[in-house]
Image (tube, rainbow, N blue to C red; front, side, top):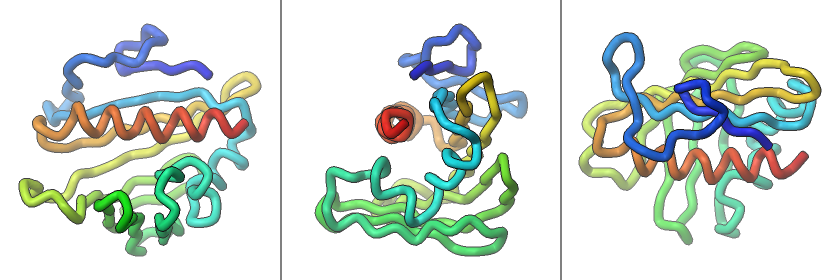
Length: 155
C-alpha cells in the first residue's frame, strides 16, 4: 500500500495541511489500493463501507448510495459522532459531496469532499481532498488516513 500526499513525494504529509489553487484549506490524501477500479468504487457504497469505515463501532449505520442530489449519512452512537451531507457530483471515477459533522458546534458551513479514482498499474489510486476550516484539517487528515489504510488493507 503506497500513500502519496499533495507534494507528490510518495509520502503522506503529516504536518500542516496545504492550500489548493483557490487558497482554500484542504487536507489531501492519496492511497493506492491493489484492486480494480470497479471493486474499489464499489467499496464506496452503503454495502461496501462496513469493512473499512468506522468498523470498530458495532452500531455504525451507513446510508451512502452515491447519486447526485441524494443525501447521505454515516453515524455511530457508540462512537458519539456522525457525518451527513449531499452528493454534488457522481461519476464512475468521482464522488463530490458536502460534509457536515453532526456533533461539531464550530462548523458553520458545509465542508466539501472530493473522492477521485484513477486506474494505475495493478492498482487503483484513491484521492480524497477535504476542504474545511483550518482548525479541523489535522483531525480530518488523521481520520481519513485511518479509514483509507483500512480500505487498502482489504485487498
